[in-house]
Amino acid sequence: MRKVDCLVVGGGPAGLAAAVNLARMRRDVLVVDDRDGRSLWGQINRNYLGFARGVSAARMRLAGRSQAAAYGARFVGGRVVSARSDGEGFVLRLEPAPAAPPDEGGRADNVRRDRDHGESLGEEAVQAPLEIEARTLILATGVRDTFPRFPGWAECVGVSLFWCINCDGYEMTGKRVAVVGHDEDAAETALDLLDFTPRVAVVAGRVEGFHLSPVRLKDLADEGIAAYPCPVREYDTRRGRIRALVLDDEAATRLAVDAVFAYRRPVPRNEIALALSAAVNELGHIVVDSEQRTSVPGLYAAGDVTSPHDHQVSAAVHEGTQAAAAANYHLYRPVQRARGGRGEG
Image (cartoon, rainbow, N blue to C red; front, side, top):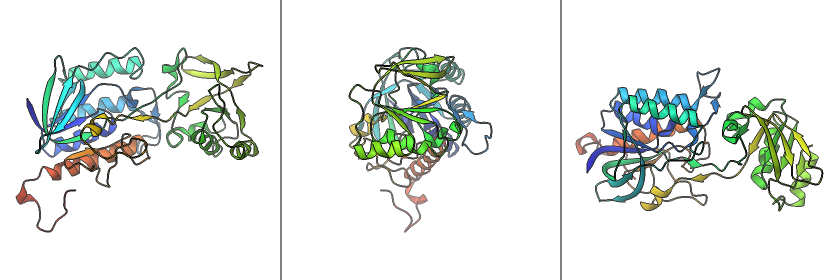
């Protein structure tokens, strides 16, 4: 069994920010990642301070991993399959990450580049079951998105197929945008997009139509948003660009678009938290306080898996940094803790 000061689960922006800061505090930190998250798609982050022309999440991973490695962080390619508390910390069992089908855990070229880069930094691939004993644990496991599947869909994610208005709404200015979704979240997304463009439509994307009240459908109509209560028969794409939606209605309506926001609620990857009896909210996101502490002492969470809903790269980096600071405090020797100082929940 290997022992570390902190095991970080997840190698996206939140996990890497935690690793950088813990390693700078001279902690023995290990990052385990299965390359199955949002940061390996094709999105460009254009609201991250200091990157006026934008920076891709996939390239941020490469830079963040190199930065963490320079301070002594180590990396393992694998998946945590079980976790338990031993009274003084946590014991986690790692196994090889199952091979994902092409373009299921991120864009294939990004995954390949990320794996090669990890190997160049000495990343160890789990070949057989391995147990890690960690004094503290940071979960940066993210969410699983449920994008619509169509030929070429993976090329479109982050290029013309989006999920976050805070991240990509500005780039929709004046464009033709369709929201694919059937419920209140889709309606709100469509209404929010009007701040950027008047050319917005909503397509239910399901045979049963919308799960919206007549009053809410009238809200959409009053705001000039066309609502189509039918599935999408075909996504007309070319080189990552969605050019039109062919609707599955009697007229086979062709809806010309420049971009699509597909709203299906993401699923938090909270299995480890649940195994450790950490509190989650009604949507399954891990409940944390302002210092990223969960309900379990020594267990922290950061990024999209957490309960705050500002799920952006900039927020993930902040949360990872805060989780590292809290975990580092947890690791203090008793003499380092000022009498009457802050406590550990």
